[in-house]
Length: 113
Image (cartoon, rainbow, N blue to C red; front, side, top):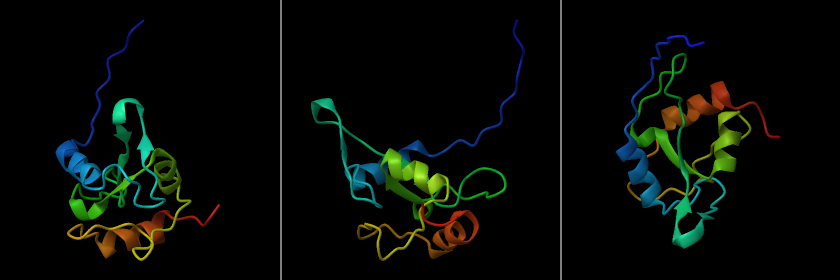
């Protein structure tokens, strides 16, 4: 059987996420790993420090996005990583917002594993 559903989702700026991942050459800003794939390709994910969805309502802006490997992405999503600008890899011109980092650390970080 089939049912009809309606989904509301946030339309993200995929070009912005791609720009940040390309700027870092897919290097994780947390652990500095670059996940290498076949054919010279690399892989990384864009993480919104203050999540986009309801409850958090973070913005889809450069100052709220970091480039992360899948492992760090899962850990930061589940609150296992505290974000500290002095420990993150941050390229000149990537102005991460203290507001979003402070939000993550106060509302999402649950303590180190």
